[in-house]
Each structure stands twice: as C-alpha cells, then as structure tokens.
Length: 118
Image (tube, rainbow, N blue to C red):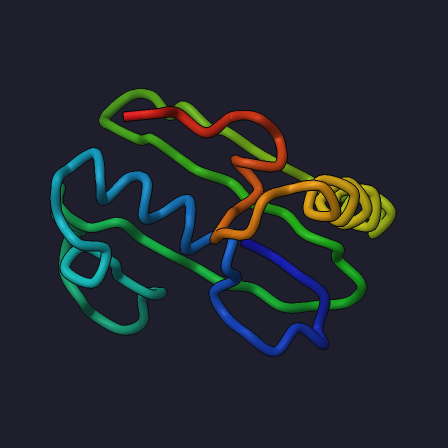
C-alpha cells in the first residue's frame, strides 16, 4: 500500500483489513502470517507468509494492491484513490445512514447493505 508522506500509521487500516481477509481464508491469525517488509538476507518467502509493505511519499491519496503470485503468473487486485472526495462522499453516506439507524455497533458493510447474515 502507498499513501502520502504525512500519513502517520503504517500499514494502513485498509491494508490490514485486506490482509486479515487473506489470513481468515487460511484459518490462521494475521499476527502469525504477516511479514512486514523485507530487508537483508531473510531467505525465501514461505507459502504461509502474507507480505505487507507500506510506502509513504508525496501526495498519494491511497493505493492498495493485493498480489496472488505463483511460479509463472501473478493475479493482482488494485484500488487507487485519486481524490479525497471519494472518502468524503462515503463519510456523508455513513452519517446519513447512522442518523436513522437503531443504536448498535456497525461498520461500512452495514452502511453499504453488504453485511452477510450468519
């Protein structure tokens, strides 16, 4: 993930959320699988690692890439935010939703109507 040079947290909450989904699929905790950056002679990456890399620079609003790589091919999923207005619209939508919601603990999946019932 990449963000502007003034962003204080690394990795971002979005990057951690994406990595947690991958860890959940493996039925393991993110803490057991996460590998933050690589430096020096650390050996080959194992199949159980989820690599998380955070870059900060310039005025990048937000870039997130999830890579699924194996020998001979890579599949990538990317999200690029090019304007903070995108997030402002989401915040306004959440506020409008919360104004009429019953009391409780919610997340954006509730706001967007994407919450799956179990």
